[in-house]
Length: 88
Image 1 (cartoon, rainbow, N blue to C red):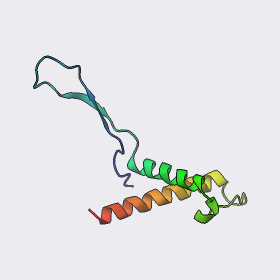
Image 2: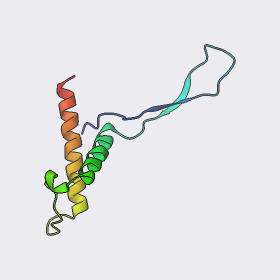
Image 3: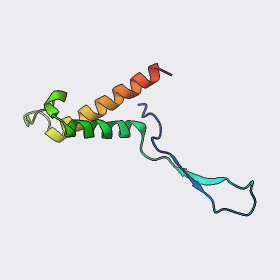
């Protein structure tokens, strides 16, 4: 599955030396994936408004409300990544 790559990659710079050409890095932290960030933002939007607009109800006979919420949030993130690929 395409996760979109890192959302907020971070380079770890080595200690600055007196050599102006010595600005390399010693590693990086990838941060969360773009898919995770998209799902996080979708979940925030759903919880900030009326969840029933997004097809979420507190019907416990199927999956729990939290599981439905997470599934819906990742569905939106996946749709965002799919659309992003079309526009490259």
